Length: 271
Image (tube, rainbow, N blue to C red; front, side, top):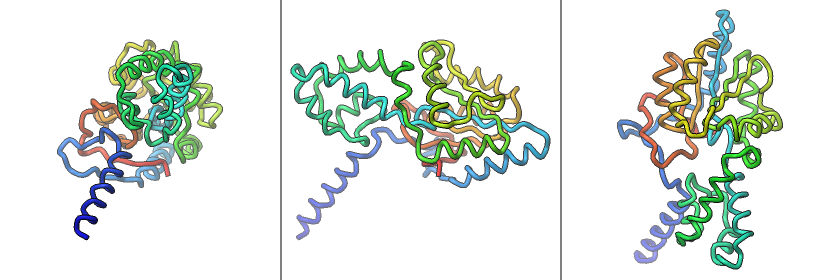
């Protein structure tokens, strides 16, 4: 009986780990994250307070893995590639057919590991195709907003706040598709109280661009809150947006992520 229980526990833990993120964010002092979903309401109140004080509240949102789930974009690229190599890599193609959303990780390396593919040749070829397609207008429109994201941003916008979408997507290859997605999905965009900020060049590092853009955002009004899924970015916003509500959105993030400043609260969803 003890042997059965031990085996069952090991199996259960293995199953749980197989669906866990390959890289989980941590706090700067190693303590448990502090989740504060109530900050969504507090941000709304901060906007209302700023309006009452004759100030224009500004709320900053990242896009990828903050408001938008990139899994559909990744899935489409992987499935399209698989359709072109059915005879060359039959085992990979069979694995792709069984691929679930929870198998889609931040990196292609982890995604293929999650579906049992370890062939380096497949990974190398897929990476080339993925890089050529992922950062384009054509594929970015496949992303889907996280549940509750649209309703929340609309609520903030209706409260009188200026919405700033601050993204690492670049202007030449992704701005058009991003604007199309925001409009089609119903996010506030296109009026004086909403703006999309994209990198002028793809080669610029996201955090470097966001630091530069922060100076311009501060001139737009009173920054009351910012939301991002990358630890390096939220740490930056804590520095450049003093007094604002800075929130780490726990979804996917870079496997090379730095720890999240222990003073920064976390949320798991927009609801």
